[in-house]
Length: 156
Image (cartoon, rainbow, N blue to C red; front, side, top):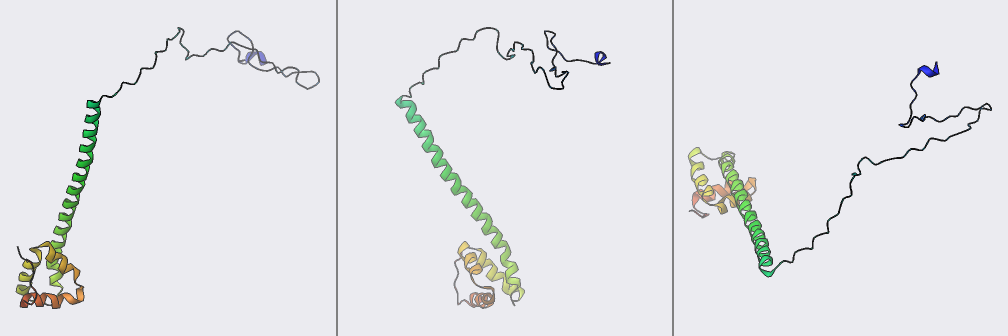
């Protein structure tokens, strides 16, 4: 029955298994037939390696161009950061201005008395900062002082 089964073997026909059968029950041979191994990735022909190329020297004109581009990139980066900060600041200021009327509604004021302080507060960023810098429990008195002309705010 053993002969009917597949027996692995090497390309030269030698069996690929180890014979461990003995009469005493101890292995007699652990020899595996030696076969010549080949590397499939090695090309069949000799490859001539190229000499490494010498690094080209950078002349003064080319070096000055590199320096100029480096300086330009650094200055551009600084300018872009300033632009991004100013755009971000404008967005924050706009969001604060939108909330001013809602904050005025929380106070005990007549509707018509809310319009004048609102127009004055949103007219300049310093006024917006001043309005939000006042604690909420003092805003009523502050707005009444603005309406009475006791506090002068910047107007554009």
